[in-house]
Amino acid sequence: MKPVKTGTSGPQKSFIAASQIPFGALVVRAGANTVKAATAADDECILGVAVDDQVQHSVDGFYAAGDVVPIIISGTARLWTRGVSVSLIAGDFVEVASVGGGSTTIPHGIVEEAGSAAGETYTVTTVAKLMEDLTIGAGGGKAVASNVSVGDTTVTLSGADMTALNLSVGDYILMDDNGGNAAVNRVKSKTATVITLVQPATVAMTAAGGSDLVYKMYQAEALLLK
Image (cartoon, rainbow, N blue to C red; front, side, top):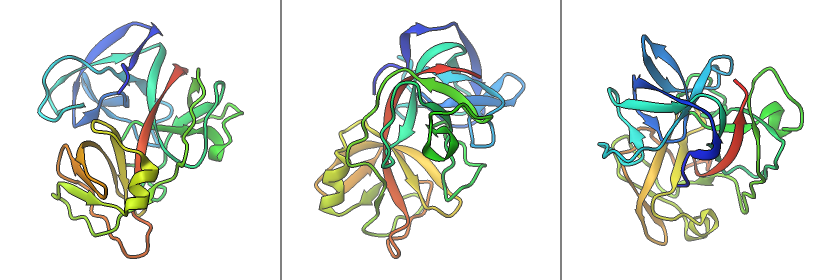
């Protein structure tokens, strides 16, 4: 991943993680002096973006509950978006993404274009404005080729879908069952058809029907507006 902090990032403030938070996630208040990854319902109360640090963590690329989390509270930062079939351009407005089939309660901290993938118009749910173009390429989530149970450490896709996602070791992914559950994970290793995860899956996924999808996540620099 690229550094979350940019040359025009503003000041930072530290909080305690109430639950697991991916590096680069938008965060909101969870309780007294604690934060959690933002959900789609949190557009009005964003505190900032979790900065990647140089400290060894129990899961590489994630803050665990109880960790100190430095966050950027103003200026620009690199935010995460999932690889949907829409390329983003500088000036687009973004909001906290609705994932898991439209659920607004899943903590993930990633963004998507505001206003039903339009992006050109500021909306009440806007949290940031992009400062660079982002070409997604093949885009879209790819269906799992075999079932994934909670606790599994691998995900299998077709060879064609693995090629289309163009994953590298260390990439962040979103696992989305389109039925109320989704979670951010990361690629530990990969073959032509199998992703090994940095942490066991927390979302069960079903191959039948082709609606349970794996998305590659991308970073883009954005100006924080809330």
